[in-house]
Image (tube, rainbow, N blue to C red; front, top):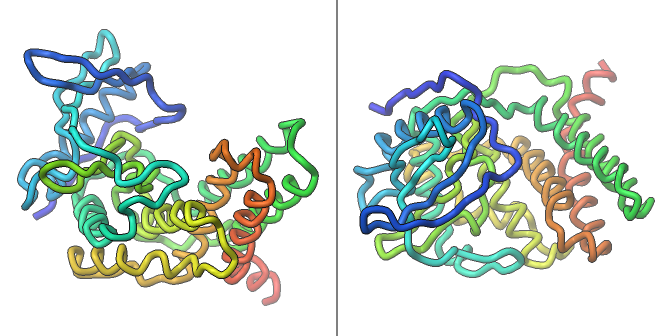
Length: 299
């Protein structure tokens, strides 16, 4: 039976934490610094995850770094360092295609862990996040009016799809920032890293985050089917979880959210406005396939 592990405080993880690598007692460790009670909550969640199907007893080796401890005085959380190379680097596909089935296996183990944290990224929060990102861009004087308009249109499309929808959804423990850069190729297989950004979300969120990253890394071509990038990942996920996140509508709007986030945060796109526009327009097109707000108003 999967473990249920509920943290006592919210796991708030933005912005990225200072990180350093050290030698301690003959072992290499990764040390991250947190303020307040965040680190204790993260460590508690990671301890539960280490005892889950993703952690120490996973067939073929752990799919995450081992949590080693948290120092409440310094706010430092320590994890084992996993030697290896990233599955891909930003802007490159690397091994993300050939090993997508294995990543799907990892993701199924994460989602099936039974670990629960307080931080929830439901549809309403993700819609608000897309709107905030458009607001950030509006505050940047270097943003062109065309790009700003595309951000606004994409965020409105997500709002049309999700804002009025309060139907209860199945939430699982989500990585929260999944991309091929968050997977290490170690000598014992693939390992998820940066697993301290944990949140509760629909299973489609992580899958769509992967596809969004892949589509942009492949050049954000109009002739490339965004959903097709999920094929092997979903196959590996379904085989491991014995269930597939088959809600295409959810996947497509989560994809839209992921693309807006990439257009907002991927610094290279700020110097490539034509690609940035393609990313945002694809996001709008995906979300506008499922306009629940328009449907509700028409009734």
